[in-house]
Length: 232
Image (cartoon, rainbow, N blue to C red; front, top):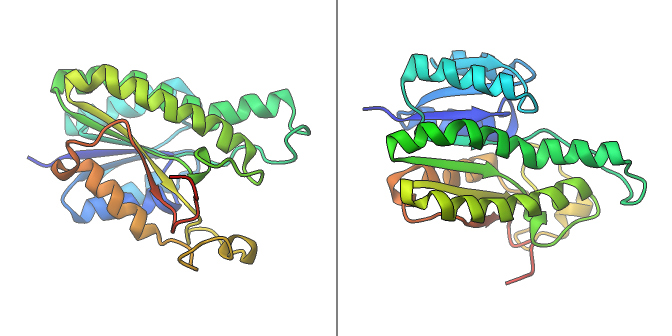
C-alpha cells in the first residue's frame, strides 16, 4: 500500500523539492501552501493540493480532512515555514516577535495537534520539521528564526518522548545555506565545504526520516549545513 506524505508550507524551495522527490519514490503527495504554488505542484504530481495558511488552524484542519478523504491516512507530515521578521534584535517590535513565533514555532504545534490523533490510530507516523542550523548557533541575520526554532527543538524532544509509545516520531532537519536562495559571498565564505547545499540533499534526508530506514530516529536535530556550525 502506498504511503501518504503531507507537506505544509511547501509550495517552493526545499519543501517543494522534497515533495517531488517522495513522489518519485511512490508516495501519494498532498501539499498546502498560501501562495497557490503548492496546490499547483500537487496537481502536477497527481496528488492533492490546497491553498491555505499554516497560521490558520481552520486551513490546516480542512486540508487534513481532504487528505483523509482522498488517501485515508497520513504516514508522513513535513512542516516548513515562510520567512519571519528580521532586523536588529532590539528594533524588532513586540508584534514582529509574535509573528516570528507564529511562523517558526506555532506552525508546527498547530499541525501536530491535528495530525497526532490520526497517527495514534494508525500506530505509526513520522513528522519532519524543516528548521535551521541557527538553533545551535544563533545568527543575528535571522533573529526570530533562531529564537523560535530553538524553542521548536525543545518542543520536538518533549513531543517525541511522549508519543514514542504510539510509534510516532518527530525530527528536525537543520539546513545551512541552500541553493533555493541566491548565493551571498558573506555566507559562502563561512561554509567549510565552500558551496551552498542543494535542495536535493535536503530531500534525501527527508526521505530517510520518512522511510523504514529512519524508524529508530526520533527527537533529533539533524544538521545538513556543510559544516557551518562549530559546536559538537
